[in-house]
Length: 435
Image (cartoon, rainbow, N blue to C red; front, side):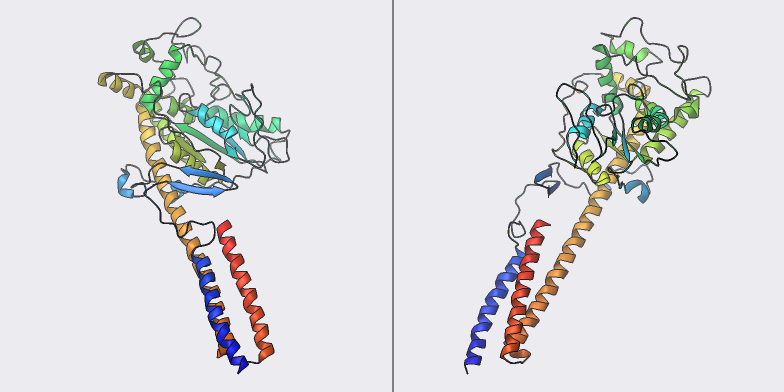
């Protein structure tokens, strides 16, 4: 009789425990699982190692394929960008810095804003930072703010690909045949008209970039191959009309030139191929190099640039990127006729930017969809685990309630097992919170 009474008392107590544990599964402590969200539309929010990454661009229609005008055919290999960047090994990230594309800001993000096991050491008053691998006196980053202009001022793709391996092996005292390095090239692009106007304003204030080497096939261009647009020390105060009138102005189609393999067209020797053929080859080369780079961003899409960089390299920025549209180029008022002239002078850059923009947005779309799939799979696996624990717990309750029979000693052993199961499930719940 007393045994039956104990069982009758145990059943409601077990039911209450079951409800409490079930609530912990559905609404773990310190989580927002049961929180009804407001109308705030954050693009992506993640908590990691005590700091918060928030992307606040609106998500509206960004994952819809119909919103991206399709002009180019991209394969899944073109869209799926993920780099297993081994910062402890010999991998090197190489930043190709094109003038007036927001590269200075992005370069500072690389040395000051990435969460690293061993952060870059940036001393006050010094432009360069020391970006060493964990436990090694070797640099994982080749950029203006880490290694300086080691391959020349604003070195282009042609210069970097031939210079960087030699410089890095010399810096780290490695022999090229023994050192199998992966060089991951990254860059930033910008709307060609805005970039061109920004460069004009920069030159107008006195910038020259005269110390740039422009090395190609082992030599710099001759004076005849690349004549100067001005006499004197600089081009301070140059009117826009004069800036556009110089045929050897490197501001014209700068992004294509700096991303293409110049050796394919005889470097700066304009007589080696026709102008039309030269443009066709350079554009095709720039597209191919850009497509095969580990990563590139667009100045006009700062938050998406941050998101894609983090997804590509598996690295996390500490602070969110900021979109600044009030630039010097934006403040320049030009007529439609002048805009057409600038677009004509930068016809190759315009075509490259349209290509780059579509590829960039499709990569973003692909990565977002892939992230959603990963999250759905994770939630499904968690549900499966919770259901398995529930079924196990219910089976234990059924046996303790008399469904399985057994004597007093056996029941005590079963009670111990149930308590162990409760502890296990509670521990799992806390793990879900931490995950």
